[in-house]
Image (cartoon, rainbow, N blue to C red; front, side):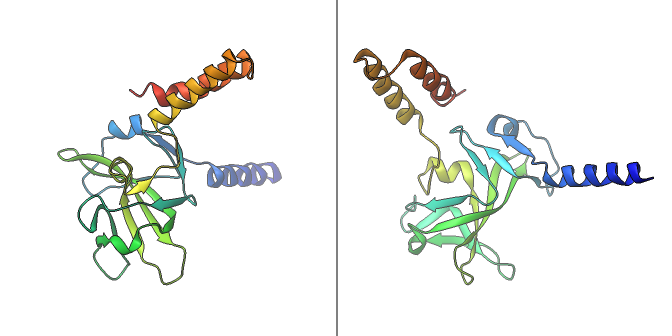
Length: 181
């Protein structure tokens, strides 16, 4: 009986700790109902960077006039509305990550986040679109930045200031960012 209780406790604690990860490629193939959201703890974005519940995001500039197209704000009592330029430069903490959308319109990765103060509104963010439009500043490295870093490392190898082994490690790390499917 003790062994059974111990096994159940281990199973419960390990399932509570286990994190569900969804990648950009997996998100594009998800099939679900129209009103069903699929949540995860970690999302590996198109840029190759992992975004986790608890991470901090930096809000950039609005993509259209003075409002954000892919960042909306609200709270439990009101319908979300497009955010205005006043939130530019703010930081926000990821509270929830989920796949939303329909088969007809397509699926996107969304984030619900909260500002740093108690009175700050919640933000509802279409993650990939917000990064693409520069409404959010990516935590990861862009393809162009990865190429530049690799070229700089190659120059350092040629100058004898970096070992070939270190270059190969860096190349392996940057290749997924450079060769985006």
